[in-house]
Each structure stands twice: as structure tokens, then as C-alpha cells.
Length: 150
Image (cartoon, rainbow, N blue to C red; front, side):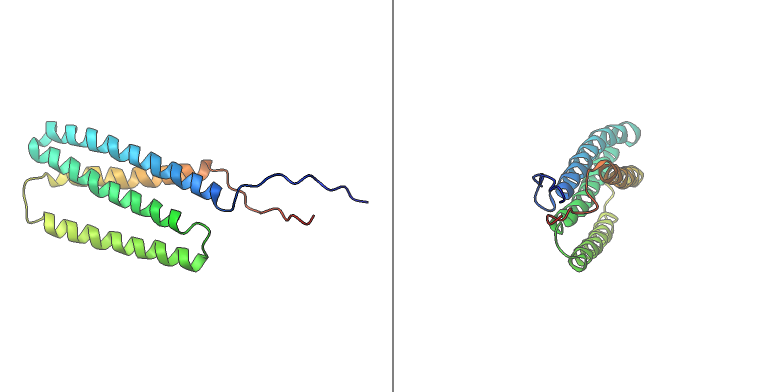
């Protein structure tokens, strides 16, 4: 006769993934806030008022990219791989269109410093990718769902 193991209460499917993604979103928004403050202050010191605007615009673009990535993943938690792939790819394409349009529109103006904008945007993209990686690495997500019949 086999002994039945007591069934542990399990959280609904997807809660662990949502927690990881919320951590990534929170960390990304903290990063962007820091970039907005530091980037605009350093930009102001380096390039004057155009540096301030470059830092703020770069931080705004970084916030859009960071939030869009995490939102697309949060939206697809619990959905099939095809839906997830379509939403993530669609959001990536939308981000590229927004970036190209924003850069085309911004090239017509000279009120911002392009170097400061580029550096802040680059730091936002790399920092966001690192924070997403760290959130997933530290997340406690099970690989196998236990079967209740055993």
C-alpha cells in the first residue's frame, strides 16, 4: 500500500511568472527614473539645456521600450506559445516603428543633444535587459507542475 503525500496548496498557474515580470517592471521603472534624473543632470552639466532635453527624451524612449516588453510578456502569461510569440514579435515591431518615427521626427529639431539622448537610451536598453535577466534568474518558477493523481 502506498502512502498518499498531502497535497500542498498551489498558487494559480501563472502567478510565479507574473511575480517575476512585475519585479522586472518595477526594477525597469526605477532604472528609467534614475536615468531621467542622472541623465538629464549630467546632460545639463555637459551640454547645457540641450543635454537636459536629450536626457529626458532618452529616458522617455527607454521607459516606453522597457514597459512594452514587460507588458507584452505579462499579457501572454498562460496563453499558448503561438500567441506569446505573436504578441512579443508584434510589440518588438511596434517598438522599432516608434523608434524610427521618433528619430525621424527628432532629427528635424535641434533643441536636444543627440549624444546625451543616445547614451541615455543605450544605458536604458542595456540596463533593462540586465534587469529582466536578473528578475528571471532570481524568479522561483517551477519547471514541472506536480500531478495531483500520484
